[in-house]
Amino acid sequence: MTRLVEVAVAPVALARLTALLPPERVDRVETYAAAARRLLAGRTVWNISSTARGGGVAEMLAALVAYAAGTGVDIRWLVIGGSPDFFALTKRIHNRLHGVPGDDGALDAAARATYDATLAGHVGELVDLVRPGDLVLLHDPQTAGLAGALRERGAHVVWRCHVGVDESNRWTQEAWGFLQDLVAPAHACVFSREQFAPAWVDRRWLRIIPPSLDPFSAKNVELTPREDKSLVRRLGLVVEGPAVPLADPFVLQVSRWDRLKDMSGVLDAFAGHLAELPPDVHLVLAGPADGVADDPEAGEVLAECRDRWRSLAPAARRRAHLLAIPMDDPVANARTVNALQRRATVVVQKSLAEGFGLTVTEPMWKARPVVASAVGGIRDQIEDGVSGILLEDPRDGAALAAALAGLLGDAKWRRELGRNAHDRVHEHYLADRHLIQYVDLFAQLLGADGA
Image (cartoon, rainbow, N blue to C red; front, side, top):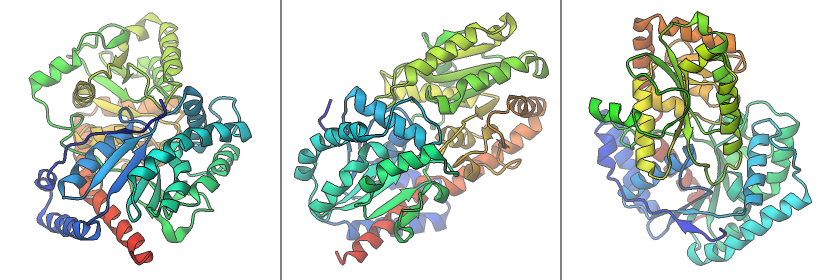
C-alpha cells in the first residue's frame, strides 16, 4: 500500500476530561482552547504517522485528535503506506535509535533510495491536501522525509520523535546520520526527553512534550467486575500455557512482541527464580495476535517467546502464560488489556530501551504497582520507591524477581505504590498538559513566521 489513508476520529468534548481536573486546571485548559481556536482559525493541523492501530503513538493520537477536534480546531490524521522493504528499513532505524542493531541490514544509499521512493509516492497527495499556513506534525522516522516538501508547500512543519535513548553509540549515530538531512527542513522538533535529541537539533526549536493518557479510552475506562472477568476469559487468547487462573495472583507484562520489550527476559527471570516467589503466583505475557503494520519483527519475537516457554521446566510452564490478543476489533483489544491490567497483582515493564512507556502509565492510572526498567522516559514516569520500582539494570533477572517477591508479599506496600502511581499520572500525564504544550508551540511557530 502506498496511498495515504485518513483516520476518522470523532470529536470529544473537552468537558469529559475536565470533569477529572481541579478548578485551576480547568480554567487553564479552557483558556488555551479558546486561544487555539483564534490562533488556528482558517488553518488545519495535520498529523501524519505510519499506523492507525497498535502501539502507543496511534493510541495517543486517537485521544489527542479527538480532544483537539472537540475544542473546535480543524485537525486531521493521515497514515502513510509502504512496502515490506520500507517497513523493514524503518524498523532498522527504530532499533538503532534505541542503540541496538536490529537486523544486519545497512543504512546505505540503497536504503535511502527505498525510503525516498516510498515517501515520494505520498508527496503529490499531501501537497493537494495541505495548504500554506497549515501545521503538520510528522510522527517518527517513517514520516521524516516529508518535511522538505511540506515546508516548500508553505506549511509549518514539526517532527515529533517518540523514540530514543539517553546514551549515544555507533548505532544511534548511524541512525541519526541517516535522518539528519530529512529532519532538517522541519521548523521544530519534539521529543519525549531532552537526552533523546541529537546534538544537531536546533535547541531554540527543540520542545520536550511527554505523552499523555486518556482515562476514558477503551484501554483505561472503568470496567464493571462482570466485564473485567469476561474480557480476561476471552476464548483464543492463550497461545502457550494453561488458562490463567483468575483466582490466583499474577504478574503481567503487556507489550508489542518487540525484542526491546524483552518479553523473553521476563519469562526467564520468572522461571529462573520461581522458588523465591509465592507458590500461587503466575506470569502473564500479553501482546497483539497480529503484526502491527510498521513492525515486521513481531511474528519472529512471538515465535521466540513460544520456543522459550516450551523449553521451561514443567513447574514453570504451568505458571507462565503467553496471550495473543486479537486486533481485529480494536475496542475489544483495548478493553482486554484494560481488564488484564486491572486484575494484575503487579505489572512489569522490563524494557531494554523505552522512549516513553504508555504500558507503564496505564497500570499506574489504575493504581497498580509497577516494576519497570530505569530506561528512557520511564525514569521520568516513576519515582523509584514512591510511585513504582525502577530496575537500574534492565537485564538483571534476579533484581526483577527480588522486587516482585517483595511486592507480592506486602499488600500494604502494593496499595501505597498504587495510590501514588495514580496521583502521579493525574498530575503529570493527562491530555490537558499535552494539549497546552502544543498550543504554546504552535503560537511560537506562527509568531516566528509573522503568520
